[in-house]
Length: 385
Image 1 (cartoon, rainbow, N blue to C red):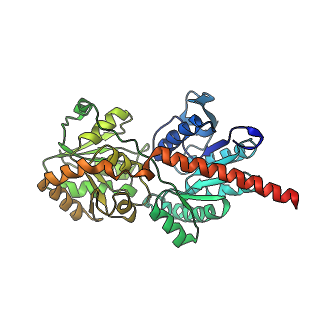
Image 2 (spheres, rainbow, N blue to C red; image 1 turned 45 degrees about the vertical axis):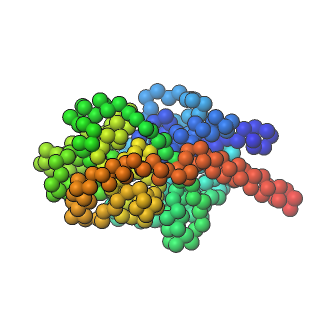
Image 3 (cartoon, one colour; image 1 turned 45 degrees about the horizontal axis):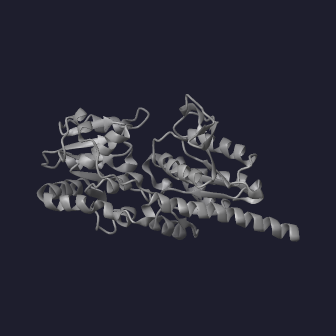
């Protein structure tokens, strides 16, 4: 409970909103937000107004505020977050929780208004290919400001915690994302694409350079595999990179586009022969957590983040950032089906406690309460002074 015996009130800013589930952040606030409400904490989530035709004020006990934005690829998130921060500073919330390091500069507002605040910075945004030039420079600038303007910095993996310490001399609190393991699904749901159990390799993610889907496709096409490669995902705008991949002439490639039916997506994970993970610049990745929780054999790009999540090869194999390496790991999997089956059998064991949603929520609840107590103590010191 916060002061005056009222429930602690947390505002969440920087996602597309709730219950809209499109990416990792939206899944995160859904899982954590619903659990916080069940624990008696009041939660308000700021939403992108253009994404919601219906705009109820409350869903599943979560308060919703709809804020407009400039609807372009680069400005929608920034304009929405800026207006949301201005709105929240005049509200009665106790703690402001912000996601995405792009919102780093907006911490000046919560500081000026004396609102306890914390930010989850996500990945190495300034290195992502999609943010070349000015975008990359902005992300580096914003990430640096995030370390100075918020009361608490949050990183989502041990390796990301080290990077922020090394690059910005900024200590942070590591809190990972959670997973929802599943043991079964309806295999008939994959028949839409002419698929059967273990007849295909799988990629899940947006078709952007950051996720190296082009590299994986190139390496797979050069392999002798008779299985298909199913690519789940797309981009919500016309994009040369995505179109280039879709034009590759190989009958083994299956582009499903977005799969928004979670039961159908679970079936795709459950029944794949192996799952490729090419994400490069993030920390704890939600798609990887799904693959672990759904019992996939994981073939991952060799990065410090993927090494951490797969416990240095205990729960997956690694390929290097070149097509030849993808070809090699594909043919290794084809030639060693018993070892691939062993990876599938033990995959869920990789979900240690730090990837448990209840544990994740425990960590955030404790952090939000400590920020409130810290603010109360600061106010008392000022009064006594």
